[in-house]
Length: 204
Image (cartoon, rainbow, N blue to C red):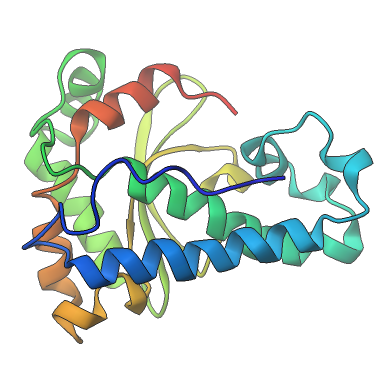
């Protein structure tokens, strides 16, 4: 069975940037629903899931049995994307990356502020529900992308190391229709230490 991550902070810990009620509903209702639905879809398919991580499954969607494929992409993406989202937020974040990640950011985007602008634009500009992602390829090269709904960059051969959730349930209680304000403020709680760890060590 797959599950949601243990939330590494209290529901009110990200205030004033993300409010307590949004975190509570987002984590306990929305994410939990994806977990419940994914595990239900996979019942009877233990021969397929045995020994596989969710990342491994989503990285090879053609191998998912056809009858459950879209359901696994939708619900499994919901689990993976939300787990990543909650994991890179922190009330005491490292404010900037260092080391190899910073070197790659500077090489690819010029500087950190340029990267943040590009990710923000991808998130804000995503039509409808979805995410803005920072991803790396197998050689560690960085790029920015956005996805619709609960799709995942793993399915296109990229490893996601940071995401901004722009489904309305991620911000609407506090920001209403002001998605850009939410995206601007979320940088105050993105933990570059977590992102560094994913850049250096993440494997599916």
